[in-house]
Image 1 (tube, rainbow, N blue to C red):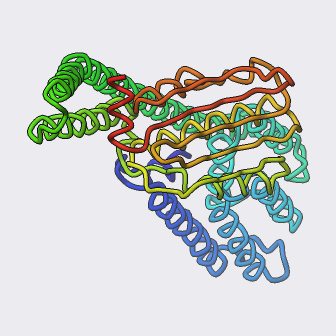
Image 2 (tube, one colour):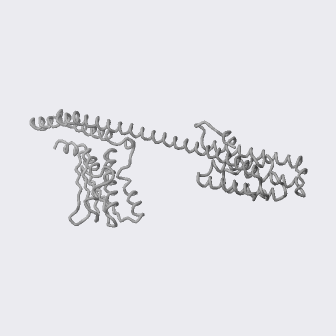
Length: 400
């Protein structure tokens, strides 16, 4: 009885919600059709059977119960399956020897649903159990002839197998969809990796060619200015603009070398108190000390500083156990000093599943900063980064 499912096929663009809603409507129509057909028979042929004192009421009640069960069969396949067999048992208990066409159709639909909605093993077990119950005559209250046993086995088995075929088709379709989605994700990942590699290549080439040339120009202008007495305004302007150009180029190269998701506004050191508070509330021992007058950092520098602290903090939490972790941020005249110290772990604390020490060192070097990390003599691990926060300091770092 695969017809009810064939009627609800939808294009792939139709949402799952609309699909389920359409299935529910068709199931409702089938249930109503069974109720109407059973009610009509109650006033046409029921009296000819005469097995019950009030056959019309019994037939109508049976039709209503059967129709409702067919309507709800997808929501609770096993419960509906059992109740349908019990309803058929009650039908024969009233003295009716044979079931009506609408009853047989309802049973076929329910057997089909067992195959379509349940996993293979439990579905097969329920289908075989139901067929044996009917073949044994327990439902009919009589010993069934051999040809009737064969008939019930074939029709109920066929209904179950059609449902099983629908289930297998749906499973294959779902696996194909999952595979297609995975292929698409892999394609997007490879494309993103290719773009990232190209960005890094461009950044390195620009750094090697442009940054070096501009730095040499600034250095030579400074040497020339000092040899002429140090007060040449033109040479001072050349030095100043050259340093600004190197700084801007450095920031631009940093944006190129960062992942694509970091090219948009990202967190900075101002978010550290919230991060620390969240970790402390989970039971970790972390202290944050900020000294000096906080200044607004360039977006790229602010992000790199935050990522350095974040990576070091992640490693400390992972390796330091229950020991205290101290984070110090010191704003100086031309630099910001970052220090993360823990009291436990070992040298392995400096490693991580991400960029680890290499990533932190690259972020510091990207802005002309200094970075060091290693185990402490008294135990634990220390990460320290010093980042220039002004163009003058950066130029001195680059030329020095």
